[in-house]
Picture 1 (cartoon, rainbow, N blue to C red):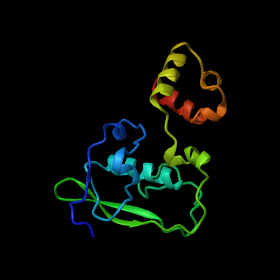
Picture 2: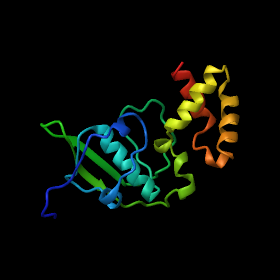
Picture 3: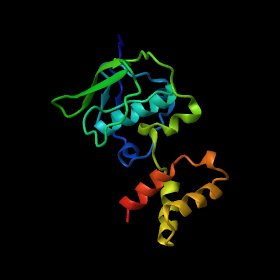
Picture 4: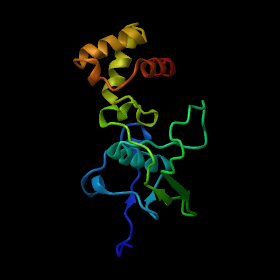
Length: 168
């Protein structure tokens, strides 16, 4: 085990605002381990999402499922469990790294449900175009043109549609 106290992942304002947490410095190579502490559940989720992006895997949260999806991780035991301490901090209680399936190719990780997020600049563009009375389809065409190709636009039309519907 470690002689030094485990690092605490500080509150992540970027994680709470829905942006992607990208570890910096020593945290870039930090692998999850039992006893790792987080200030907020969102910080734990953001850290694991970043770790998963690094390994091209995905995570699921068993509760709060709005719409059940087809299970694609047949028998995979890869997981991360976080418990809340009396102090209010979240501590990683269990981490299982092993997968029994191939991981998603790096160029397709952004398509996984847990990694689909709209960046700040894309949100600004969508808001501006929506204010100009453009619908989601026309907004997507504009984003594709703005970013020089569909491969550089990290959101799907359905994400654009959902964002415009929820942020009227």
